[in-house]
Length: 120
Image (tube, rainbow, N blue to C red; front, side, top):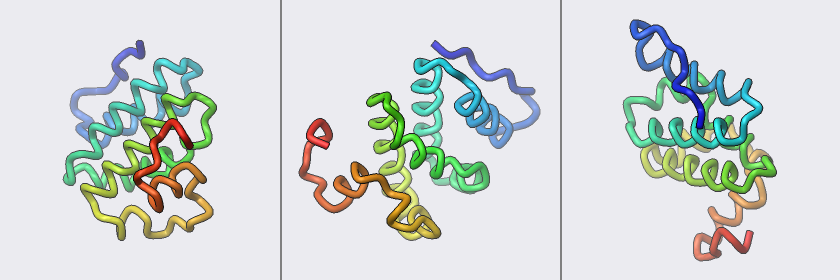
């Protein structure tokens, strides 16, 4: 299990999210990556976090995670991306993200939401 990022308590939410993103990018541990991605997904539920998620390019991190070999990371990435779609709406989430950035799995889920994840 990943350790809680070492963050100065005075840096606030942006600093904490930056520490999570940095940990995700630097860790070699798949368990840590899974935990960090799940934590970032939790922040996507709150619309007040979107400015920070956009600033830190967390949605791109979710998209990049779609190409991981770790199926749990891929599932978390899809879930996280959809959380952002539901909370923020499609325009701010998909804006400046060409269809070529969407992996085949995510595109299939967007176009055919009735297809079970394990068939992708």
